[in-house]
Image (spheres, rainbow, N blue to C red):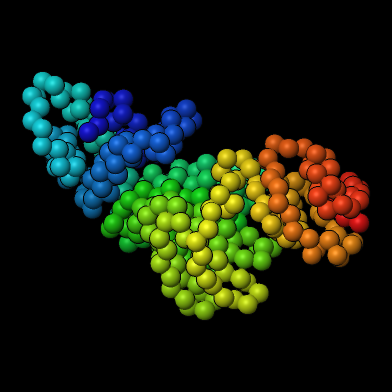
Length: 323
């Protein structure tokens, strides 16, 4: 159950998009680490998004909100009224903010927002429904200020990790390159960089349904599975793997496990504002196992590559030449 009015206030502000920068960081932290808080938010959001006129919401009391939340969570313990006063004050905050903000699927004017990242940059994005998106370097996310209609839809270019808030009535859809990912509430990583040989969706929790526009394949993933599309042959397959290689960027690392030099080059060109040219074509046959921290200086990484590839590397301004 929601413990205090401070928690209710945080949830109410999140629903109305009135979080300060400090409150936003706290909200994201609690959503990622506190399962009880996340469930409380999802229950409050269901009432918030219920199709209703503002006048109807004025009638909806804090008592009704608390009863609905408690019933849906199957709380059976009877608590005297005088012990619940703080919860009713908190519930009133949610109702009041709802009346002032007028924010729901029906009446919010559509406004499309875009967030993007630069070289070596990552960004946390909080969507209107409480979904948290971690955007990787050289990527962009297009999303509405308020979700309307039957689906919650976003468009991704590049790579991002999604921790989606549950909402059975409004499935969450990610359109990324030739992939369409549909979920109810789950966490997964999507990578669709244009220069990469493959696109992928790695599922950590929950379940997702994928549609591959290249061949109309429809696939369902379970936790621990990754759907990989080889763009050259336009074929997709499901594999079970250690997903650390695909999600290590969340902790500030880029991990290569027997990776081709081309893959290493593509990721380095997203980490640093450089262009890499390979003059010794035999180097493209080499496989590399190592890791790069996002804070590493370019010179340090180039020195490491010289050792691993046993080659000479020349730097001319932003051009890197492998010989």
